[in-house]
Image (cartoon, rainbow over all chains, first blue to last red; front, side):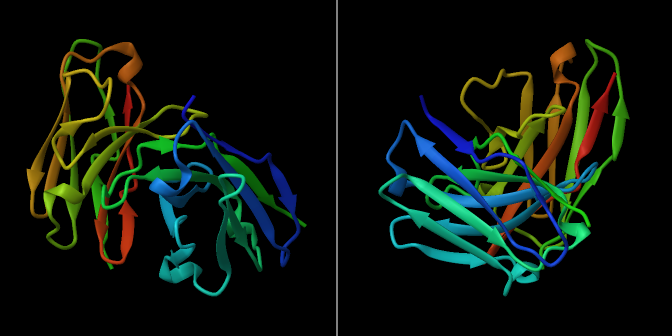
Length: 119
Length: 107
C-alpha cells in the first residue's frame, strides 16, 4: 500500500525543538521528493521546505531558514523534519507530502502530526 | 515572493448547483505549476487538479480546472454532498512553493 505515515502528536515548551518523522512505503523512496507543509489552527496551508532523498539536498522557505532541518534515512525510507526555537506561533498540524520530480504538485500526503507549543 | 489570493473566502451553495473558485497569482507562472487540493475537516489535503487542468487519479469529471498566467479557476459542477470542503490552490515559482489561503465551500 502506497502511503506516508507520520509520527504522533507532540507537546513542546517555547524555545524547544521538535522532530517529526514521515515513513514511506509501497513505492521506491528515492524516486520522489518530500515536502513539509504546515497548517495552523483554522488557517491555510504553508509550505516549509523540500528534501530530495536521492542526495539528501534540502531547501527551506526563507522564513524557516536557520531553524528548519530536514533529513532522510534511505535505509528505512523515512524523512525527518526538525524545527527549533519553537514559539506558540508554531502550533500547527505538520504534513509531509510527496512530489514526483518536477511534477510541481503533491500527490500523496501523510496523515499529519499535531505539534502544540505551550508553556 | 509569490502570493496566491483565493476568492471568495467562503461560498454557500446547495447540492446540484455549480461552484467557481478562483486563484490569482502575484506573478505570472506557467500553468504546469498550478494545482488544486480538497481538504475535509481532520483530513490531509487531496490532490484534485494539476497542471491547471489535468484531473488527478480517480477525480470525477465534475471537477474542471482552467486558467493561465495569473488567473486560474476551479469549477465544480453538479455539487455532491461530499464536495463541501476547503479548496486550496498551490503554485511553484523557483525556488519556492506557495499556497492560497483557501476557499471554504459550505452547504
